[in-house]
Length: 171
Image 1 (cartoon, one colour):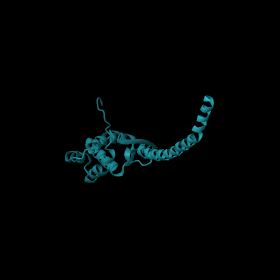
Image 2: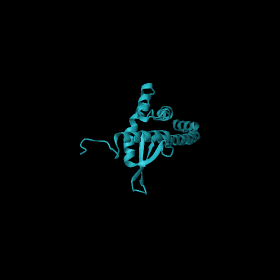
Image 3: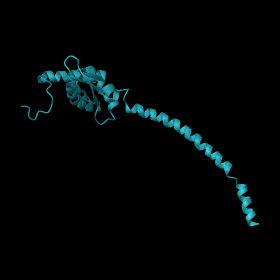
Image 4: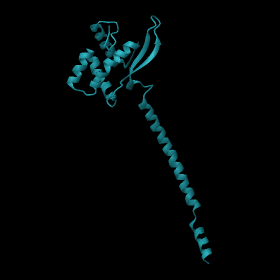
């Protein structure tokens, strides 16, 4: 019975499972996205997100903790040099799992797991930059529109005519 056992054992022994997750985490950090099964992707997300949270603060202690999980100096260096600065403002949810269908050989449900901030196609920050460019264009148009009514108002308002009508009523 598996009462109270909350994580997926993935059909492996504990040492095999830890080696699998460590290697997958290194691949995810180095390549920014990997294809795998949905079950492994969900297990990897639980494994790698605490490591990414630790990487936001670059201390010797956090580097050693990351190395104990990853067992790769190159992956730790990549994590603290390039990944950590990009995720520094994010409070969590560093990974995204996208289901990609079924594998032809054994019909396993496959997925793409990726680091959210490294996807150039779907990046909310890039959309904000486009909105900023549009707002600059619209402010130029608004300035031109605002300038035109000011000229019209000065042409429409003729003070001497108003004075002459008042003088006629007084006479």
